Length: 410
Image (cartoon, rainbow, N blue to C red; front, side, top):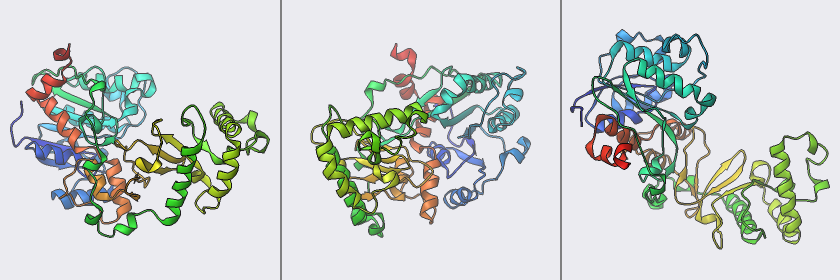
């Protein structure tokens, strides 16, 4: 690679240290970190012995040590799509990306690796991406023209979590080839790769589903195994709308509802009309379960249409929109709230340690002792494996560039 061991890096918006973990694994030394979240700063200090600064907007660039690599998973606020066209300082002002730009301008590190949510690629009809790209180029960096969208499951980590990665190589340091990945050649993943054996989990009972939760999910299992339709519903199933149309809770206000809601109501009504006998028996039984109300009386089946579907073969999340069921191949993206995934085959929620593994942190990583904070912090974190992957590509790793450079593919 075109960077020596012992290179210096800074970790902006550091969270719990996903960038730090990857960069130190590549031989780097962290010389500065910052994050606005006090709990994240404590976790970072506990693991890496560095006390991060708080608000980056209050830090003068000259007070940040010299460095070779700037890292940052920056929050994305609104960008100007018009402005006065005065360059990055005009169009990014008021955003935290501006703070990245002012530090890059002052220190001119050889590299910068940035990450953001997938929506960054299309936000404001592509104008946000254009401002970011053009600002970095104006500062003297080679940046790939199109946003690179990538997920841990593309490299075999069983989590679907698409994010935008922005690699920046200072123009006098070297070129940055166009990145290419064949979406049809995703390696196989298995959730078993990150799961602990149940006998390895202290206080296992607190992660297990309760009797009522198992009964509630069993009721939905009976539903998907007995419903008659061409294919299992891809639309949200709302138990309250499985009834004659005139008994529907939206009957009197149907014409006032948005089109998407009208569409769901109509489809649920069609499901009722085609399965009246079964649903007339199933619904009263399901409603005897004390959990079967509100969001838990809704189902989002996203696990395909195989023969003899079994809900317990899949991964589940209890969401405000209902019980979401996805194929057991990989986990949905960790989120910064306690919508913790349920492993159907284990009939339990995943643990914080398993969340750490989904973000490619080593088992030596010490997460927050308050589990709600730990789940939140892992949900907000960047995946360590992907930082390592894109840093190596950015640094000029021959093997990665041969495999993922567009010019080599075509």
